[in-house]
Image (cartoon, rainbow, N blue to C red):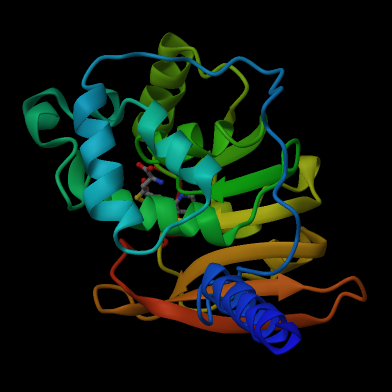
Length: 261
Ligand code: SAH
């Protein structure tokens, strides 16, 4: 009897351990043991619409969750933000397709999975401050604003920046701060940031962005030659200011340019 009970305990412990290991997501660099942040009582305004909800649910299920994005707040954000409002009118029917889409001026809105993945690796806690370089359509900024009200975003093409700011305002994303400028220099007035997300490809990590990252901060950035495949890199600054970085996956982003136009 005692032996059977002991065997049961051993089995239960083994099952628990296996579940714990699986739950950590085999080698996912951001799947650490921190408790999940609470956003139940989010006290900033987050717009809601049921328009094309079924397509967003399908997008999250088939393109994002299936490929391993697990953070439930990121999945909820992807279900909430009406992506069709962020693409040009003639491409609205394709807004939830599994691909990037052109947004004018030679730029693109990233594939939904990439938006979700980059958001997840930032491990944003509620109220943390995040800087985005490359506002584009404003979609990624809207997704970030589901997780924290403190979103700052910089765009180098004036026409896109103006359009995105108007769109975000019209849709009710009123907590996002937009600016026109060369994001290579970050946005020093609001630094330091808990997280930085760069959505254009840089040849190397811009030193001003590293400087504007808080100790304990995370940055995700595509690094590599323009027009080719780049590496999506996760850069971390520890509490002593020491920088470490790791490559996450191959990606193809539009290049970081250096002239405001
Ligand atoms: N995050 C965007 C996708 C952006 S595409 C979205 O959700 O729609 C990349 C954007 O980076 C383009 O709009 C491009 O104009 C912008 N960009 C390129 N170089 C930049 C720079 N130095 N500073 C700021 N933005 C830049």
